Image (cartoon, rainbow, N blue to C red; front, side, top):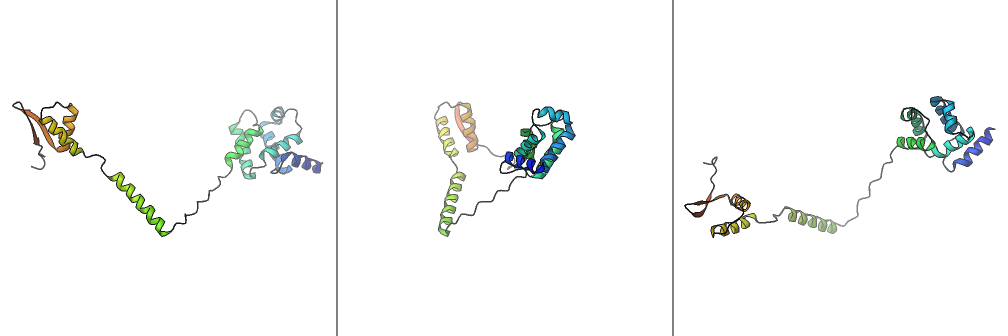
Length: 186
């Protein structure tokens, strides 16, 4: 009987499988946690041999430690009914260790290639750090326009004056620009 059961389990399970004892243990754990009536109702129409074969097939790709942890957690995760094999497999998968990825090998570069790449990186850094726009030239242009009598927007006047450190004002009907002296510096 044991030989026949082992043969049926191994034929149903495929390349990775649990032993008959492990499949039987998993079924016993489920029956112990949920009661045999609930387990029978879950897999109605299947013989215990077929249930063990299905468990061996679905859970065979997981480590035994992951399967044991999943069986321990199942009653908390599924308190009202036994999990189906898909749910049990998902629990097992959640307990599988995450494989470490190997680091890529260092590129084999000649010293000339390293120097070229370093120079290109430094050039990019210079471009990023370089001022993109000369605000003082823009402000001087606005000052000239304002002094010539052209009306500027309020924000243009404020930003132009701040960029040059000046106060643009009209005293006695004449437009003037005077430097702002810091009160703290005096």
